[in-house]
Image (tube, rainbow, N blue to C red; front, side, top):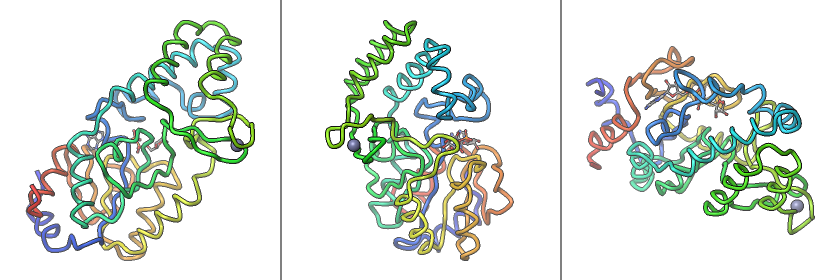
Length: 272
Ligand code: APR
Ligand code: ZN
């Protein structure tokens, strides 16, 4: 699976704390979470101009509340069933063995943390967290509460007012300033969390190798990170089951599924 010259490069160059990674939806595909693009992707079923965009979400809540509920129920039912796969777990081992300095992710599914990666940088937020729109206070959503909320949505999905009542029941007002909460994810057209982005750049400044795992690398600013790392002189290794928009930039390409390639990298380094 991993070509010989890449195996040699990995064996000789994966030094302590000098490897970083940027992951995308592809690493969670084998946990049952659909990717966004490509065959069967989420955006094939739901228009991102509506469902991944604040004005779009507000408009569909008003005009077709049942369609918004279908999306929320569909999306969270998948997330609540998902567990880390061998790829997530292999990255956690690389971090534990002090090879991997950080896991920078575009994913909002929390699977890296569930796989016990400690230094996870979530560029696009986390679907299991809500944030106060005023003071940014964060609250983690309990999964049982989310399951309950999904059931309430299903019963009340045809009424705008009843949906608002479900939302206010499960997303109460902020305990600190009384404002409303929203899901702590970055929608299209919104800015990435500054702290997370600066943490990501700090790790890119200190890495010799950047692994790009399971991302089409077409959404900026996240897709700009490999360009920055490359300019700084880092070697770029892509792990994907098909070419991404930055494949030409990569020094090494490993074509395959992340849940097979990453455990193989552990084997090359003697950790599996
Ligand atoms: N192993 C490795 N790569 C895989 C696998 C797998 N098992 N399955 C799919 N892939 C690859 C696909 O080939 C594709 O290149 O994962 C990539 C998924 O691409 P996208 O669906 O575009 O996901 P991503 O790159 O994470 O999207 C970035 O776009 O919609 C926004 O905010 C959203 O964070 C997301 C961002
Ligand atoms: Zn607040």
